[in-house]
Structures are given as C-alpha cells and as structure tokens.
Length: 452
Image (tube, rainbow, N blue to C red):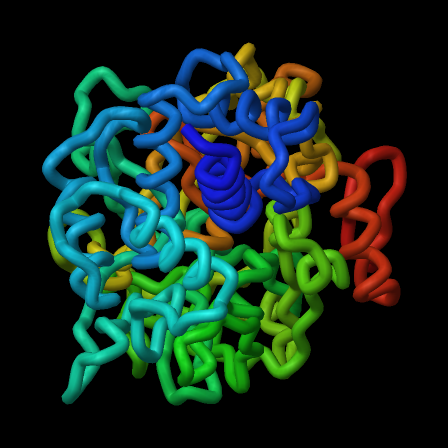
C-alpha cells in the first residue's frame, strides 16, 4: 500500500475516532503515532475488541459502525466488529444518499465522502435532524422528512448474552403518586424549529428539576445539514405523569399539573467540549415552587373505588430516607441501581428499570485515556432508552438500620450493548448545582440539601 493510501486511511479513522468515537483531543494529521495508537486501543476497549492499537479487520468494521450510528443517529443493534446485513445496508444507504456505488464496500471514494460529512464539509444525510425526534431524510430527497425513531440515548442488544436486559425486564410504575416516583418528571422541551421532544427529570427542590444537558441544548441540523447546538425556547414539566388516571384531577393523567421551566442552567463545559459526557447535566428552574404544595387527589384503589387523599408533592431529599450524596464511579462497581423515566416507545408511561454499576477492565482505560470526557460518567446495565435522558438513577443503602434511597446519577446515553452511560453525581457536579441556585441548595459533608 502506498504512503498516500496509508495517509488517507489514517485520516479516515482519525476523523471517525474524534467525531464519533469519543476520542477527544486526537489530532487528525494522517500520521500513525503514539496518540493515534492509544486512541485506537481505547476505542477497541469501548467496542469490546482486543486492544491491539492497530487497524485490524474487526476494528475497521467497528469504525464503520460508529460512523453510521453517528451520521444517521440510529444504533445498529449488532456487536461491534462484526459485519452484518444491518451494517452493510446502512453503508449502502450512505453510499446511495451521496451518489456513490451502493455496494456496501468502504473504499477510497466512500471514505472521502464519509470524512467530509463528519467534518460538516458536506450536509448531513438527515434533513431537519433533531436528536430527540429523530426526524430526517437524505439530502436530495423532496417532500416531507422521513420519520425515524432513532436517538443515540440507549442500547438494547439483540444478542441475548448481552448484559442489558431487554424491554420485557422493565416494569410500569404501578402508582406514580408514591415516593419517589411522584418526583420523576416528564420533561417536554420545545425548540425554535417548532419540534417537540420528550425526556425525563427529577424534582430535587420545591422548584428545581435535574435533567440532562442535551435535553436543554440539543444537537440539531441547521437546515443545511450541518449540526449545531439549539437551546430550547420552552420546557414543560409534569411530575408523576401517568398515562393511566390513577389519581384523578381535572387533568387526570397529570396528578400534579404542568409547570413551565423558564430558568435553565447548563455547564459551560457542555458547550465547549467535543466530548461532553462529563458535563451532560442541567437544572430547570420552574416558574413557581410546586414541591411544597398540597394536592387533593381522588385515588383509585384495587377495587376501582375512589377515595380522597391530600398529598404534599415534596421532592427528592425533603424527608428522611431520601438523599443526594456525592459518589464516584468506583463506589458503584457491582452495586444494584434503579431508575425510572418516560421511554418514548411506551407513550409517556413511567417505567422502572434495574441493573448494576460497571467498573471493570473495559471501562477503566476509557476514563484513564479521556478523564475530561468520562470523569463523571457511570457505566451501568439498567435498560434506559429514548425519552429517558435525565431519568434519575439511585441505589439503596442501609443507614442506622434503615433503608435510604440515595440519588447517584442521571441517565444520559448508550455506550454499547453491554452497558449504558449515566452522569454520576460527583462532588464536582453537586457543587455546580449549588452555584446555580445558592439560595436554594447547600452542599456540605458530601450531601446536597435544600436550605430551609
């Protein structure tokens, strides 16, 4: 192979690694040096491949897979490193969208176009792309956008040996009036493009909701097929939302009503870093306090009869048995964790999931190689999918002989079929929340609490 061909191939995989492979800081120069070898090894670890640091066949296939995942915002549900019909069809679609020979083979012409699209020198293959809605279509298509239910927020493996449980493992929350489920919020962001998303969040003070930053600042197409961050123009929040009117009020499926969230905070690092997982958290400030309000609800019992019950909404941390304490990833290795949120495919019904924290030989090199990207990231096996960005992640601990629900993170993204990502509530994160609302929150002794 000629030197020019080697340079072209190196530029191709360096570009994929930096844009779609989470290898922040790698210089795209066409040279195979120590930093490129280290980035390949880290990518191979993430992908479950042998960390050889060289471009072998499985790594080549895995690079194409993450590139297609990134460009079409649709996870290909097959193990990394294996050429499957799904991946080959995705490559053919890409080639067809850009006027290339659609043979599913990645040669110099396909690599060149792929690099230019990843660099935003060419338009995205999705028109009117929106990360939450998954709207899109090829650049040359006419008429309305092709609807796609595709966000890169979670993975559920088709391989039954994978560690993440399938959707059948999740359970519908039986009563969203119970704690802590009444504090879990359906978050509905509205964007300048008039598109409406769907996400989750958690009430952590009378008027503050914790969620993911990419719910507030979403990755969108600027109209010419090039991505940019778009901030929401409106956010509505429904605590304890349930598609079934268990607790009946005027708005039966919204037992605690709907509030707008005009105040919004996101970390500066989320805008500044190309790999922003460690900064993917946000705080929504509601138009008025709701956590201290009382609601008269008509609750249906098991016999279908209704009885009147007065409920003070509250928030996570307002009573014994619920706390927000700083953690690290290693604190949660092998620990059982729980989550609840509003997955898109269940039509805004609150669902619960369980799994465990993962900190092993595969995940440690990722944080060591990219601490600024993965420093606050928790790997876990709970099944969280589209719409559950911002869902709370908690664990149960024993304190003085009593069980305590300890909030440890929020769901943010998929990694691979073996584990998903959550944003761990480290000391750094909790101190930032205190800075955003210093008259509401106090961080002391490792615990974030609300000032009374």
